[in-house]
Image (tube, rainbow, N blue to C red; front, side, top):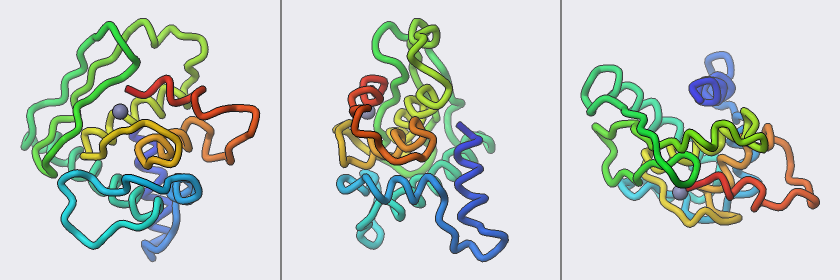
Length: 169
Ligand SMILES: [Zn+2]
C-alpha cells in the first residue's frame, strides 16, 4: 500500500518538476466521474479523477505524518467477520487514525491476489481520507482502487467491475 503511495508521488514529482501524472491518476482520470471530493474538503472544486487522486494521495501523506508523529490515535488493525477490509469515512482532515477491520478469512481467498488485496485496502484508506461510497462504477472511491486492482490497465469487457467491487466494504 505504501508502495502505491510512493510510486504515485515519484511519478508526479517527475524528477523535481512536480508536474507529472502518475499511472494511478491517469487511469483514475479515465474512469472516475463522480464523488471527487472528501467530505472535509473546502478548496477549489475538484472536476476530474486526476485531481481527486492527487488530493487523496496528499491526504494520505497528512495521515501518515499525523500517525508517525503520534498526533492521531495509533492505527489499529482489528479482525472482523464480514466483508474484506473496512474503515469508517473520516469527517475531518487531521488526526484521523489509519485503523481498519480486516476479515482474516478473506486473506486466504484464492481469488484475492496482491493487486486485488491492495485495492481493497486502498478503498478502506480512501474512507480514512474522507471519501464516501457508493462503491459503484464511475464513482471515485471505486474506480481509483479498481485501477490498482487491474495494474493500471484499461478495463476489459469480459471482466465486469463487480469482479473487483465485491472486495470493497
Ligand atoms: Zn466503502
